[in-house]
Image 1 (tube, rainbow over the protein chains, first blue to last red):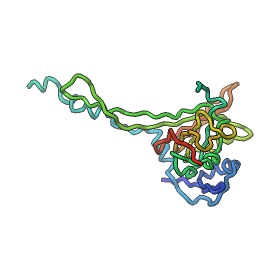
Image 2 (tube, rainbow over the protein chains, first blue to last red):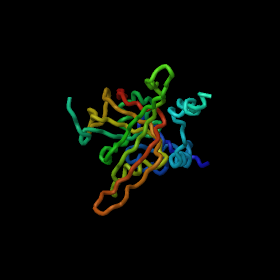
Image 3 (cartoon, rainbow over the protein chains, first blue to last red):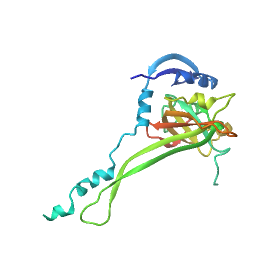
Image 4 (cartoon, rainbow over the protein chains, first blue to last red):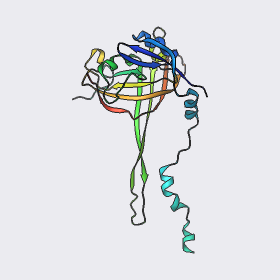
Length: 78
Length: 160
């Protein structure tokens, strides 16, 4: 599992972080790099996987209606 | 009071991860340090939805329900620019940060929100950044989709 590296940037008294590929954009906006690649964030691959394969989340309606639907009407008559 | 369109009214910015310390009350300096994406923005969809949980019972024919969870989605369309591709370069996939939305514009230069102005702060992570289909006689654009990894502050106020 690959971890995404982030670059710490600063502007005036403010601090932030960005991806290495976005450093140029932030520098054009007055930010400067203070530390290169010291923090690690969430895996980008993991995020993509979550987006491409939507996990089947239980629907509240299904949960609430399950006890009712599992018992056919004719069984209750026996 | 008036009904307005976003053109020349709305301001859209993107703050770096860690660049906003209190999303309910970002400071004017933090907002000013954000990258102004307004000139690149074509459309933006920041929305939330809530779920209801059915709570039926045998003693009534009325299907009651109660409040459940809620979630939010964020995606936006921007222009590419062959001279200053700022939006594209600011928002690579995997970027974490905050979209700042001033729907009615702020009191600063070019509608920049300043102290006491209303603001929306959406904590996001870019999950995809994709170019739009290329087509003859069509401007080049791209779309970003984001996960919203924290409850957004839709009624934030800029602090001094």
